[in-house]
Image (cartoon, rainbow, N blue to C red; front, side, top):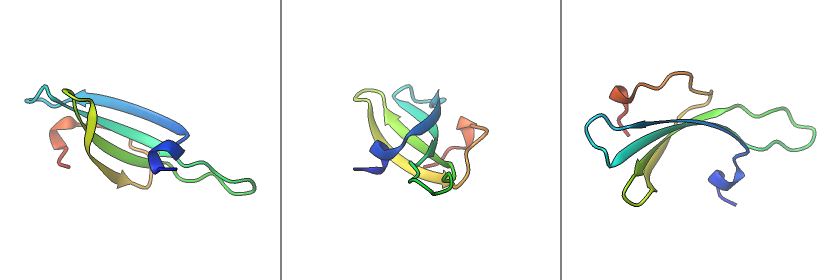
Length: 78
């Protein structure tokens, strides 16, 4: 099972690149599943860069061990 298949609680936001309509960025706040008797794992924040011609992820990057609360596309460099 990959990390992306194991994600259970996912909240996402998407924005088009300001100059390139072929690129969409998605911010995901995700929690990994917890086992019985274990405390809830921390949410992790990821940014994904999508190619809108093929709808495939070109790049992804973990940007924090806590959930992201703001997303400004002008400051994205992955």
